Amino acid sequence: MVEHEVLPSRRRERTAITVWLYGRVVRGGGDIVGGAPRRDEGNVVGNAAAATAASGGNEVRSPAYTTLTIEEAAERGARTVIAGTSSAPPPLPLPPPPRRSPADGDDDGPQRKRRPRIFVAIPAYRDPEAHPTVMSLLSAALHPDRVHVGIVYQLDTSPSNSDSRCFLPPLPAAWARTNFRSLTLDHRSAAGPCPARAMAQCLLEDEEYVLQIDSHMRFRLHWDEYLIGQMGKCDRPERSALTTYPPGYALVVGGGSGGSASGGRGRRVEATEAAVDPDRGGTILDPWKFDEDGALRQKGRRLPAHGDDDRPIPCPLYAAGFAFLPSSALRDVPYDHSLRHLFFGEEMSMAVRLYTHGYDLYAPGREVVCYHLWSRDHRRTLRSDLLGVPASAAAAAEHGESIRGGEDGGGNGEIEAVPVAAADEARDRSRSVVRAQLLGVPGARGLGTERSAAEFAALVGADFASGTLISPAGGADGGGDGDGDGDVTSFLSRLSLSSAASPATGGIGPTDSNVSGPRRRKFSAIDGGGDGAVAKEVMSLVAGFLGN
Image 1 (cartoon, helix red, strand yellow):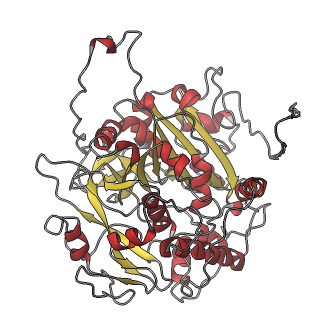
Image 2 (image 1 turned 90 degrees about the vertical axis):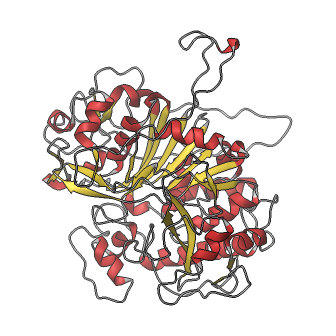
Image 3 (image 1 turned 120 degrees about the vertical axis):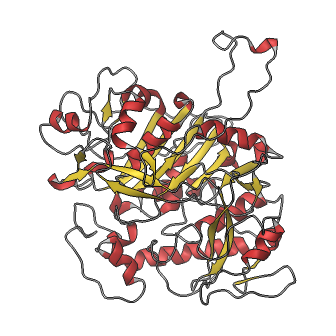
């Protein structure tokens, strides 16, 4: 029981909302605990094998922790090498040290200024790469003590426990006691990236910066100091965001990261290492095409890593899987938890909302900061679980191919999965909200007042009403046929980058072949309604988090 009391107020009426979350505390052997270790807990676990052994041979049902150092743990579970070699990518260049004044004191003195901290928000859907991502963050950071991580695990919580490998490799216990927070919900209650990112952002405490990423990433050495230094080069650091599609990496099974790790349902999953391209050139976003559903898609283009000018490059587009912002941005432009089952459209919604709230978006610079696993072959997806098929079959189904369910379908377990039709209806409602935002409909949810949606569309070079990309001369470039690369050169020329960026063919980012998303009709109704009363919004928020 938790005692709580709502005291009467003579100044204003008060409303009390109590939410009871029912679940179970999972405790294996004496060294395994459910959730992050408390600050007063001592020895937690030794390694992945010890975690399974301590639980009497059962699968790990909560994040595992290790007494290994960050470097030792990363070597076992998150190695990153240049493809074809055993060498790690070179460190990112460090910014020059700031000028010091006598008031700053010594580095170790009582007046030493605290390093700005970074909160990393990670939604993870049944992803065995989540913990390797955290280990890469920590082992590559110049100051890992400044890195705080919040994960929203969306996985199988039923007795079948098919996702236990998502809690491995073990996280360093000494770091996790103070710097790690997590939420766990059953994957059948998941509703897409927007609600999950909104929940992850709720784990923010008082860190100065936020890094929003996906759960399958690898980082270059000194990424933390580099990003903070690049933010300082922006015209208005307090109202800026660094964001782009990172280049990809490939998983190499049994690549020297310590043998095999425990998997779900009694399987043994080979440990992996990430192989990355030696090209260190950074990326910048550009418009790609309007798809059949009326959503503007974007791609990442390579930039050459040369010269001394490594300032952030203005670009109005937003990448949900990599965005570095001051934490104040989460208060000004929080993620919209009500955009359920929305995939394509999420990033345009955030881009126009940040722009109209006065935030300037930039590509981080001419250096690669991190790498993203664009293939989804290593894990299940929300769409594949809704259809009850492997992820590859879910992608094929969206292109008209026949499918047949498998043993890992989304209908198993104690919690009933959301019907596909209901998910599609929720997605269409979310699309209507985003369309209203992009068209600047009066009362569109989440827009700011410092700049207009029309100004954003002009900067991007897109006519969202007709679904066409616009060239500088005013001609329409078409929306959804062929490769759909659009007038990429004209967009980059507005950013003074047409001669520096890679050719318009190819590109980096999600495509129809590696992202399972419904391809149905175009946008229709426009929802321009307001947020309603405060109490109603709070209840809506609670319902959204609980997946109702």
